[in-house]
Image 1 (cartoon, one colour):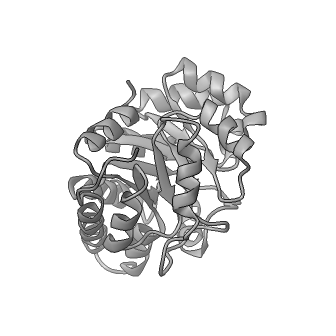
Image 2: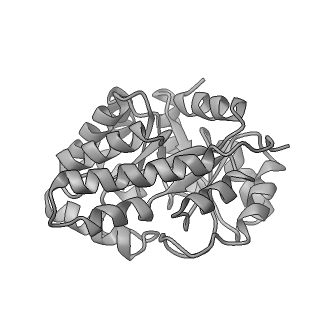
Image 3: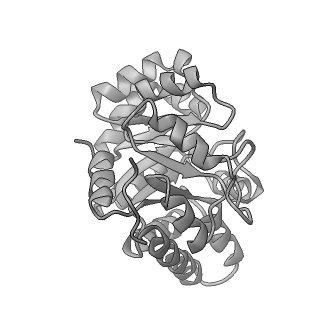
Length: 272
């Protein structure tokens, strides 16, 4: 059983959701990013997404793009992403990388999978990789024991959802709305239906992302999904702390993590 599978299984036994927190590697600095992610884990984040900064982030909204641009300008490279994974994985939290396909392809799929596994990573989210183009990557992740995580969206056909469910491992990432990342006043009403559609074809856990930024929203999503993914809200806390002492941003993301953890830990009936 993989680290992700163990985390979701333990949460299911506790009748709660899994909290998945994201930050891009290298923002605002390598050291502060690692400190922030570590503080998030201490405050209740179960699974960590380490973003691999990329110059053409199709799915990322302005909040994450701003942090990613600053990280790239600061010189963050794949080696730094792997160092971040190694540091965060040492906390015991299941640690993933979120990356667009181009950087992995340029680095070499098998090389990236090998190096990520060596750093303690458990999987990779590839938002722009389609099943039709994923053969080499699926072979590489299988060889090195990593979970390949793919996305479904409200626009996905039933056939596409079944195809992705057949190759994805760890969890299925359900994008709650069409569009880019960013916190919203409310999570899309299409998210529960999308999760239900995924559950008709797989027992793999389903985690919902795009739009969650408060404890109330986290509790709402955890009522019908196995996991709650939060990215922009954490990044915003660091952006708002720019210019202050690094500890200010670290405290801010830790406080948000504690709030969100309280939301996903509200007891709920286990999904049927």
